[in-house]
Length: 139
Image 1 (cartoon, rainbow, N blue to C red):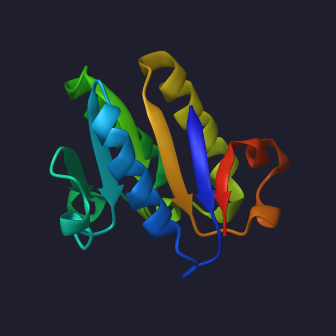
Image 2 (spheres, rainbow, N blue to C red; image 1 turned 45 degrees about the vertical axis):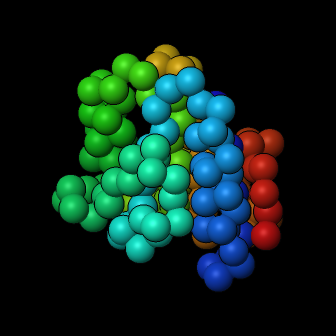
């Protein structure tokens, strides 16, 4: 399953994402991973959550990002949830390509039973129609 937290820059998406990941980890049967563009939020995350600073891994386009995600999943068979803050930046995705990349994540989610929650700096009205049903928070 792929869920989206959307809204323009500076609207508080990260706070909602952090609250969600910290509440989910309490009941999670498997591992939880949080991907961000820095380690800035390290101390706001429960210590059971693995924080990955994507900028350390030389990801330069959306295909490399998808490969990076598959690599994480392949080495952790107990992975249950992944949270992406600043999705457009960490995944190197243009607003025009959001649908294709999220479609790939949906396929990965179904195949490997990993849930994804993405924070995206886009107004809900600018999302493609097929993605609007995935929005859980719109700011």
